[in-house]
Length: 112
Image 1 (cartoon, rainbow, N blue to C red):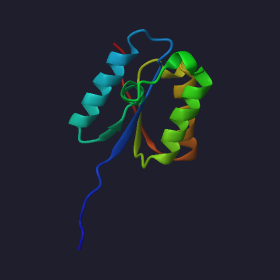
Image 2 (cartoon, rainbow, N blue to C red; image 1 turned 30 degrees about the vertical axis):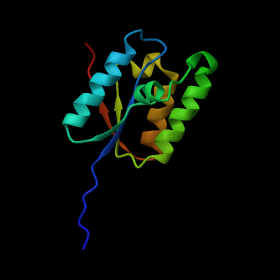
Image 3 (tube, helix red, strand yellow; image 1 turned 180 degrees about the vertical axis):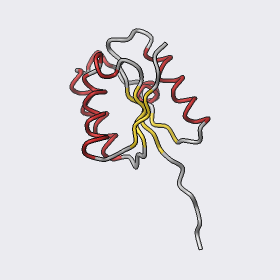
Image 4 (cartoon, helix red, strand yellow; image 1 turned 60 degrees about the horizontal axis):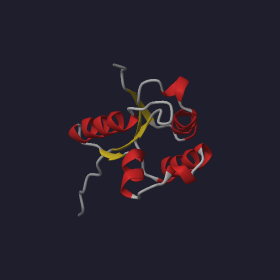
């Protein structure tokens, strides 16, 4: 009998284009949730590892890509970074998808 226990998976969501320090915030959240035992999907890491050239991407392209990740991954939780509701159309769209459509848990990170 296979009794493998699946680790919980979380996706980090928050403002990127409106926050010049977004990279450090996403990586800090990633480390925090790894330490809590989650497998973490960090869209900033995906950008970095795939050498995503955002000069050729529109905001819509990024939002669509990230929403596809939320839909296709076996997520348990979405982690919302500070200012997500007022400073990020993508995070807001991801929040509604995660909560209203998929019924995922949401963790809210506090601001500085």
